[in-house]
Image (cartoon, rainbow, N blue to C red):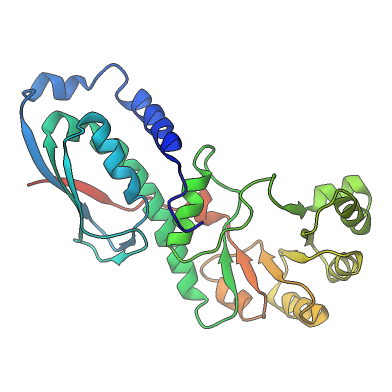
Length: 279
């Protein structure tokens, strides 16, 4: 998923929902203070260093209120820009631009925050074989956008949801009775790709022997991860998860795992500071 992930219908629905909660029956401040024929030229500016994500939503948001507004995009998604960079210059009806401002900024700041944090993590593991994965820890309704922002930051998408990949976790194993029974059940269900979450080296060996095609090594120390890599001997891809932050990720990557997943990328990345400035 490298192209912008939303269809036109999904973009329209997103704007419908955003405007319903913010504008609803009308922008009373703009209507009370700004003449209907007033025009405005303004620029979205980065107020800190950041990686950009979400620009394809800006024009549809603005054009919903002023179809004739002109927008000049000065950067593109995935660009790393310093503070002070002009991102988008726009000219249109003043009421429309100011009413659309917060919706456009909110989503651009949120997605660029994800992309920026992702790039920070990716830079930490540069030079190792490990690649950074996102998770399902996303704000409901924004998963496609959050995972797109992860890509713009240089990360790799894990499964989109429960529907497109098997990941057997500790609770599945507890209910099924064992790692082996869980994997056998997934295989009987016709699943070809089966990932198993493992807390111990014994579980890792059991999962591989049962036919798992990849392992998620949960909350293992770097020393244990190195042992898991040796035990695996290249048989299946290994993903490390749990206890990963900017302080620990380099040591985890240097154990030789193939992937490292970080829930914080999409769950709690701080929004970056972008402003709409007159003139």
